[in-house]
Image: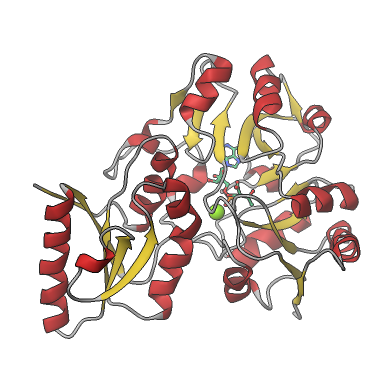
Length: 350
Ligand code: TXA
Ligand code: MG
């Protein structure tokens, strides 16, 4: 399949959105930017479009898709038994990086929800995403536009790498601002439950709803037998090709331990990637040091994390040694993704 790749800007904005909308209405697939990561869109109410999405991503079909809407009133078209909390969250955080799980109405096919009675709904704030949903006149099912298991795409280059030849169109709007997928909160349970941490933090949700809890599997640093409630969270994810280990603890000791191991690997003829903060980058004595951002700025780390993981694949490292980062507020979502990328390999140093 020929994939049309278009860079969108002020001069062609309306034209591109219009063409992409037509493709979606015809049951085709379009990758487009959102404020979190690039999404791979198809008509959420068509089983055949959902099947195409799963096939383009190589994704297991029990892993449900998020339905993207352009107006809060669309909630009532797609979901039933909507609690007051949904409207409060929508008022505070939509359009934006928050996905709500609600009971689905019959109109939403099981092909989109992976066979579940619930549906994930999000109203994105990125102008291209919002414009596309509005102009297409449909609800847009969109997982992240990566091949299943790979890091989510935060640049059009990542989408092209994974999806060229597999979908109809890719809209290139440059680098994505947030860089980590939306927060998912389940509103079908008595106490709203975070299934996937993201830019909208537990504290922000608590400020609006008073109470929120976590799916236990989100919090643990080690592999557990518990099954996550968001089916997608159970798969190996974000994984670079090389083995990745995270080192946590006192900063000086972390740097010393990474230097010790990097030296051993280099002497053994391995190529070593070091995922470093800007503060520590000058302290490493061996390996390919790649800066993900400042230890003091989790937003900067989030924006670069998936790009850095893909970069390690491009330069073909055999092993990746990574610093651990602060897990306060948005840092929790960042570490959730890094820990998944590491397959839960974490070493605690002194
Ligand atoms: O930021 C985002 O949410 C991006 C952009 C494109 O909007 N989308 C995204 O979609 O991350 P995806 O498909 O890569 O991740 C969706 C996650 C999966 O972990 C899936 O299991 C979960 O949402 N999910 C979807 N529907 C669900 C449901 N009904 N119940 C529980 N989890 C659900
Ligand atoms: Mg994904």
